[in-house]
Image (cartoon, rainbow, N blue to C red):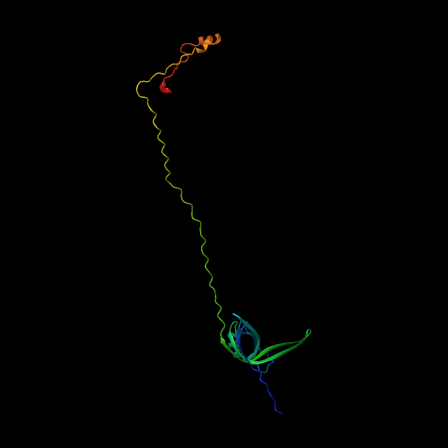
Length: 203
């Protein structure tokens, strides 16, 4: 009877979601190999109408590496690196309280690093800007402002020539014609009672 081997080969490329994990071999292993696992995302763009969308399919990858290969892959398989994987798809089974569970993964026999992970940029500390100091208040002027000059008063008009004496007022006796009492009051006023007794210049 001839044995028939079906083809179970998968080739894929993608980027690492996170750094690869490594497990050192145990002392009981006859062929000590480092076991490695990581997860890659395969992106595919497609168009819906006028929109371009991107879909990412995730795959779990496992493979074994020797001691020399472990040092290389530990340095290269970092988050963001782009790799090419060739391997077969297998299924892990586990029986537990919740029943049997299955995990699909790719058992890789070829792992090529296409693009290394971008180097982490170290952002230099931004120097702090000096705080703006308040401008000192302006110094008071040493020179005092000159006092405003007093307004010149208009000269008083001077009367030229000789002073004309005021005309003295004379008591009016017109009301004396009305009754005797009025005539008596008018008779008591002296002759110079209505004269002005000051110089007209002091007016």
